[in-house]
Image 1 (cartoon, rainbow, N blue to C red):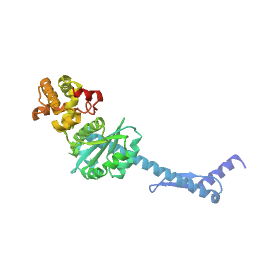
Image 2 (cartoon, rainbow, N blue to C red):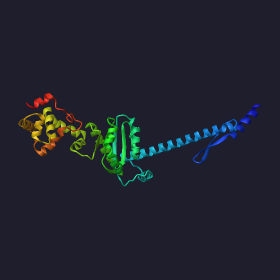
Image 3 (tube, rainbow, N blue to C red):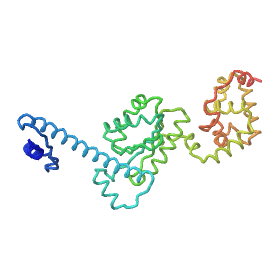
Image 4 (cartoon, helix red, strand yellow):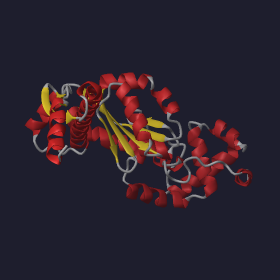
Length: 314
């Protein structure tokens, strides 16, 4: 057989064994396979089906990637208050079925390991919460409407137990959708407070004097601690801490410190003389309360050393 005849035979074989590739109802290509049509056709069909599966997977991956990019755009626009095209943004929200009339809360989750991202994606996907975003290097943000949050709150203990020692959760305040950036800001404060106070999670709406003090600018906290705290000895600071922990009770404070109530009164008088604030006076005690220990300062969780405890009796 001449080379020309052999080539013509191969072409005829490929034409006879050409199987179209269909994708979304349209022929997008063909699979050509040479050989006896009866023998090779099953293999051609198999290759065609595999190719169509690959095309579908590719389209699905592109769709998911596109959806992820849009969700990232929604979340970053909201938490950073950076909505440049309100009308277009409103349409995007509508396309994703986000009800703008509801209130929302933001979760700011600090991760000890960024490999947790996929686990959190799965967790919140199962909770029907699509507004999630990993922010490099170690933050995971979730925006929930209040209906979703109430359901999440019912399982909060289980959540923190499941991810124990791997993350710190800060829960932001309730806000309308276009005020979500405020919820995000407060969620970050709550997360920092939880970290310093050694709590797995903290809800900013569980407001307390400590969180108010913690929210003060660092320079103001430093100024107060240097001005008032520097006037007192470690022994006196421990007395203040214990006094507040016992709800200003002389009897219980003295018992906790293993000292006589008269000794305690003497120590409180010395604190009054040094600071100008009387611990036994309600209004003055408010000014001394930060000395109990601002979160992040060395007196937050101080233990009473044995030698120092003995010195309190003197």
